[in-house]
Length: 84
Image (cartoon, rainbow, N blue to C red; front, side):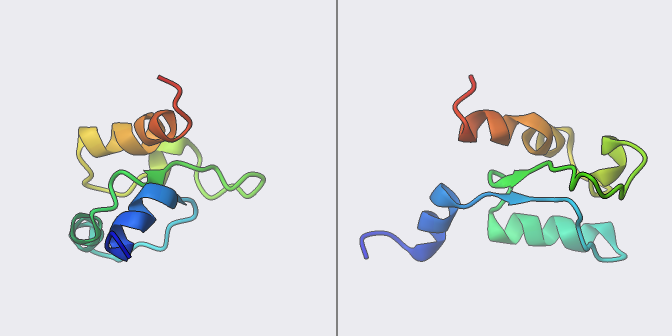
């Protein structure tokens, strides 16, 4: 292989966050996201027709930064589908 598998995965795999099995401590999830360098591959999904949350803002993990929220809610999808 010319590149580590982790790089290939980040270039070709995207993950959605709904539904998200999150730990009781929000910081633990943020640490996993940081350690896996996966902030660029996470995207929002609704899991329609299943209603897990009253609104989309409730679907986001507690404690995430505004930058990561923007990436999850729109930025990563825009980059993936080359929308601008």
